[in-house]
Image (cartoon, rainbow over all chains, first blue to last red; front, side, top):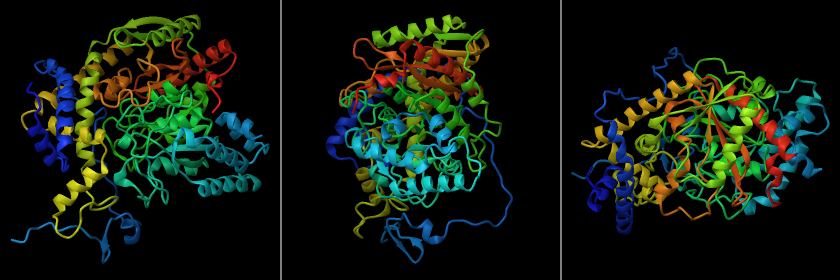
Length: 98
Length: 498
């Protein structure tokens, strides 16, 4: 198993949308490397003919009748929003200038 | 009067309220006064809902005055882990990212408690997003263990267990993803139950690792836990992982504790290096007690349990990296860096950087890594195979025995700060509890004495097959009665006064 580098941590942080500071990158690189080293033992079973279990229960979609029923009011649904405008979530710019 | 009321069990409180010997308001006020007196030291609560609790208590007293029949826990105060949404009351999950968020709806569990007239005192402290084994990862500061305030009360539900041990509430709710109900119960000398996966609705419970998370009861006695179990368990159409089957007869089992003729398995893998001598000593005495009470003791071999911790620390972070993607600063909670010049992507990254603590960041990145292209099969895929092997080990063991037992934790409560910089050392606290979460079956922790070397509580873990939760209560009640008779009082009475 490969070790985990500072650059890899920076890449992971970008993928995970975490704006990590420089010292955090060093700190996490060491810790993640230790953890990955310890948990890599699971691959000892990788060659075995064992089916994976993703969930303890067999999951099926639960459907309900398509009926009109009460829901949260727009005010209640937006009550925890950091910013709102015209009964909508106000979000930062998503598309670039170009 | 106040001291007497806070020392009562939930069953006793409910009986006294129903008989008119005491009012729900008096009981609630006694507990609010206790919180006022000791919680500055313990820090079990993040939010105390004084007005709401008294309003619920008044409603119970009015109901009784009208001659209406009261439920088995009507008027009994409860401390609710801050992971369940509560309409109109803050829910933070121990995180800065949800600081000040007031949910517009109740979790199913919250609603069931209210419908049963249980009085919700407030929200308890926890490791951020339930990630941790010590309640040190709370963004709002750690909780102290009432047995020794310099020690951890376990995690992630340390606030709930500390509230019980400090007599701030007779009942509490926890959630158990890798041991977060049982491990705090063990180190605080209280009772904690992880019901079968799917037995208690997850609707409105902030998700950490969806295939492992399970809400459950925390109490000071086995019977109290059973009474609470019956209130919160049962099918919920709002949760697609909720089991549509009758709740096992847990209260009946708790009232008829017995191990006579039962086969009890001792897990071979749960001892050895890393286990405190005093923990093993108390555990061995518990096994001897079970034998004296008429159980047949059988050693069971579960070789895959040795890989459980490793599998857990791949599966749980993988699911958390996905579940926590919703905390993007756009819809609720904190938003950082939105000065009109930054894109949504940058604002999300700055918000998550400001809102998440180190353990959450560590697990989000670990999960992102384990799920990334090229590593998926080696890490996440292999962990899922281990999960299959662990389930098979349980199935094989339960062909030979009715329940299995082990120490709940390898050590007693450690000092606050002792393992803070060593994640792997911290993760070891959940060594004995994790296999049950991976397989989805049921387990309980109850006190089995104090470790001679430090005088701190030791927990005995009982494990039952899925949907056989009543066996936990049957065995737990028998063990509890025998230990209480031997000690001459409940273990918690040996805790120093706060």
